[in-house]
Length: 133
Image (cartoon, rainbow, N blue to C red; front, side, top):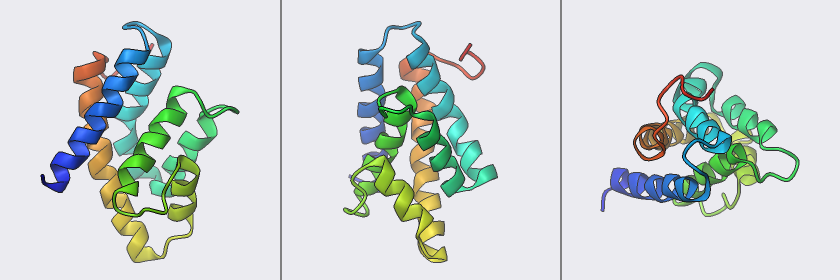
């Protein structure tokens, strides 16, 4: 299995879990899909560190809302390449403290992963850009 196939398969599992957990027209489903679709652009414009900390700040106090889940999903993807990334908080720490070559590599890896979440949120969650309400 190629790295791209691994990214896609894990993203598919994560997005299907969101689809199974939240009703078709639910606010949570729309929030997850909207952020998944905006994330690649946010990473490119604001940078990886700022984009991840934005997700972290929006996840709520208990960390259980859908934006927190998206951050955890990204951490799960990057854990494949760095076993120390065990949670969204650890991902944010790793990115914040990374040296430039590692930061650039993590940015490329996260962008490649985020593109799958953006695509799958449209096909599996049925939410198109601008539908977040």
